[in-house]
Amino acid sequence: MFRRERSIPLRGSAAALCNNLSVLQLPARNLTHFGVVHGPSAQLLSAAPEGVPLAQRQLHAKEGAGVSPPLITQMYESDGSVMVYWHALDAGDASLVQAAFARGIAASGHYVCVGTWSGQVLVFDIPTKGPNIVLSEELARHQTPISDIATEPAQGQDCVADTVTADDSGLLCVWRSGPKFKLLTQIPGFGVPCSSVQLWQGTIAAGYGNGQVRLYEASTGTVHVQIDAHARAICALDLAPEVGKLLSAAEDTFVHIWKLSRSPEDGYIEVEHCHGECVPDTQLCGARFCDPSGSSFAVTGYDVAEILRFSSI
Image (cartoon, rainbow, N blue to C red; front, side, top):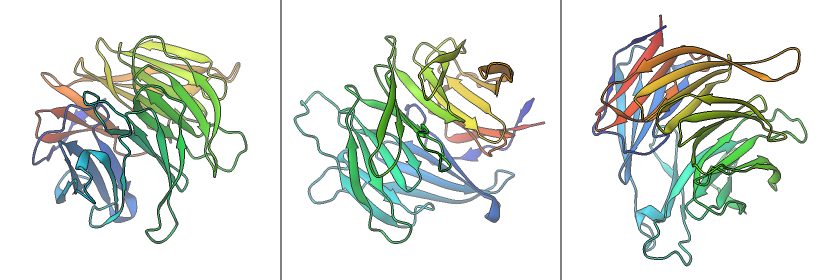
């Protein structure tokens, strides 16, 4: 069971975008960072465990070299204090009626993957020290806009899938990261967008526009489980890696928590529903666990000027 905790106030609401909440826990400093996007700016907040906001920073997209803010990818220090890199997106031959944007971002080792409206995934090589970030590769396997990207540490194993990219057609591409990313398998869509994707111990969790959550074997693309989780489109998924808990949030105003485990007999994924939480009269935008054990989670909603927090009883 979970109970509502003290909310964290925002200066404005979250934009009506899927996966519009990021959470970074810093146990050594007893802090949690939250990030929310609204229009051409991002709000970064630091909060103590009891939810008391300690700092809030507004990051505004900056124009550079004649490039408008929507066509720039910017990278900052984790507290938002310094912009260390910016990259101008190539609009190419995009028509006037086609929106140009970046969507989906995840880190795999020292690489950061950023999805774009064209279906390309930009791979940036991040050095251990210093700001010498370079665009190392462009992955071009998707034909429709990227919707989300997920990664998982490969822990030095060969031929392990550690990156998944999803797009608006529902196609999933599974990769092994490295100096040259290698495509391992493709999982075709079935007519609805894949709005959110996660990766855990070789299992892909994908949330779709019809409210379904599907679990796939990353190495083969085999479907393990199909869950009719929500009555409306999924807007966010998250995983608590230490315990295998999966969080799903959707436009039906519900947040659900599921426990994933592997059957010792056949190795297939088994799913148990653990908790359901209704956030009434709210268009949910983002939802994330606040710790790797899944004992607390946070939710954002459109036209709601706060981050809602819940913790286990």
